[in-house]
Image (cartoon, rainbow, N blue to C red; front, side, top):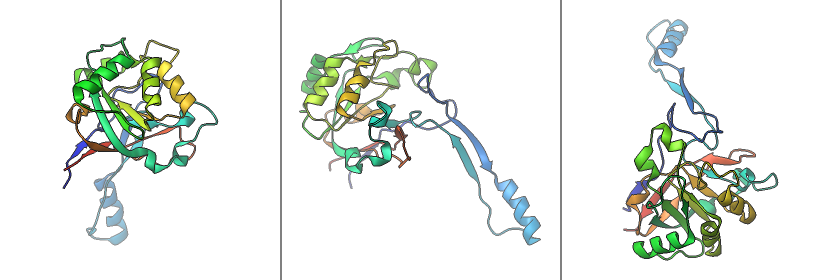
Length: 234
């Protein structure tokens, strides 16, 4: 059986979230105690079964998630309109962790990282870029405060190679202090989705794997939380 590497961050109240988005909130919706009390009144005896549930208040772009074209422009495809094949593809992972917070990852950086990892990015791939930001700062406030980003040329490099998706282990592929959003802007122009808030990319750098990260079919969704995994070849 193939090995599976979990690339998804845990969802919990208080997790660091991009500063403009709804914070994740969780609460106990139904408790064992409440159900036990209700059923005892109805049955007049100890109930044979009880249950418990939790509720979530969460942003489409809060935890590990994918951005749909609808996130970038009003007439872009919303998440439920996108083909699921977009979210299952050959995966390539490289390490660009030499770039620190506030710095730009360049096309030359990605090319050098591909050479170091022994991978060739091809048409139809999903490319995962390990910045190391998750490992260094999560779950502190610094995680969502300052991190590197892709400049326009690096994003265009991915576009030119025909990738169907790409992902980073930080809240955004753009630095938080650049209001021009060079990476998101090019994604908008080319209808290119991307995944944010990944982890464990270091475990698949240079490996041969299938990337799988299926979104929820949220009506008119601008994105969706996903369970992102890398399925390694045997």
